[in-house]
Length: 271
Length: 236
Image (cartoon, rainbow over all chains, first blue to last red; front, top):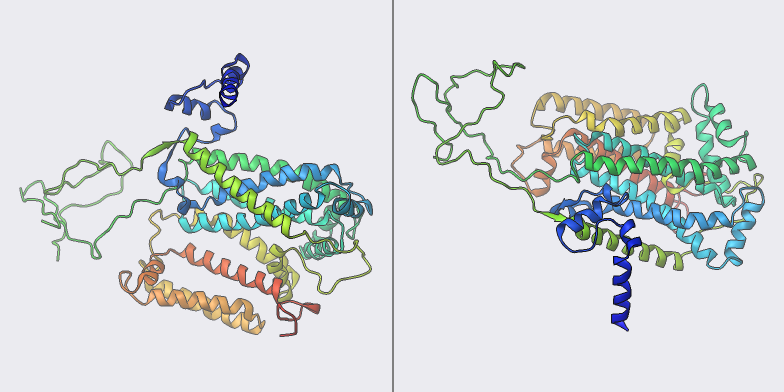
């Protein structure tokens, strides 16, 4: 049984169709492993080889990776949620109740989306702090830090626009409180608020705008910047590594430099 | 004491006139460069396996959380009935807390804008790659600037009675004074570690502590009418 499965798998992996998709070929040599990464659109954001030390958990705590994982979970749960959701008043709230009582695993789907979203916001902050305290933002990675700041803001907006969609009391008043802050912007505060809400109060227009922002605009922006963020890691020299610890003496040791005229010997500090 | 060196250093961008690199080869050393670089591993499978494990661990954790805890869902949105207190999502509660202390133009617009600008300019501001400690250069002048800043902040925040921001500010300032008082190689491990830190470290630490304190107050300690309450109920 096991061998027949193995045979079927082998036949599949050696078939023309499979080989036309994954061109690296089969084999466990480093060349094959390199091709498996380099010939794949998604994996080729990784370099073919990486420094062993930068893979250790204690270096990055994998915070960037984990943030991206939460983003993938949010896409994977968000699309099924869209199938059960109408961005209209009061149907939006009724859809929440349907998810709770009618849709199979609807509660789990919504829970996973909600908790993954909170986790993503938290992880983005944690990732930022970790990158900062390791000094990984310094040149030549300064632009990638800026991309990261943009992604932080996009993440906050994604979470904030999603917050309104259940159309319950929590959502409605959180967005009311938040959008009132915009009114404080000098000159055009009220206009920006009107543009964002599609009205002077949080209403059905606001729900539709937040829905479009949450499900279309902001995810596209996020994906674009995530792509740039990953790509720049490679272009800026791979994952950051701390410079080797060099132990300088507490006091600079004197060294005397020979001049061209006198043939004096160079004295080493430890000689 | 060393004799004054009998050579001069010049700034010159013409590589034909001025050498671009100088090495002093002293006795019992060799010009050989030691290879200290880390070994490489193949991304497939070493990296991909680790990423897969990290993915699965997080997915399992979030799935368990989602099975145990339900996402909140209150009654349908009702513009007539205002809950008390009306709170923003947790990551904006620090901001909402700021709005409680400052006028909206300051707490809602000026401070967030400055924070975002500060975050963006961090890598361009900290151009010393070595990231030398704050007190290694211009110590007296930097101490004066710190003292003046602390005095101005203390007076300003005291007038506005914003103790929640003043207390972390004074805490960070105290740490900075503590590290400024001694040469970098003295003291315990924590002190030596802090002493080696550049200015951006202190600004970021200050910002993060403020953000955590304000978010915690906004989330846990604010009740009806934005009054102070205990997280377990009862006014403070």
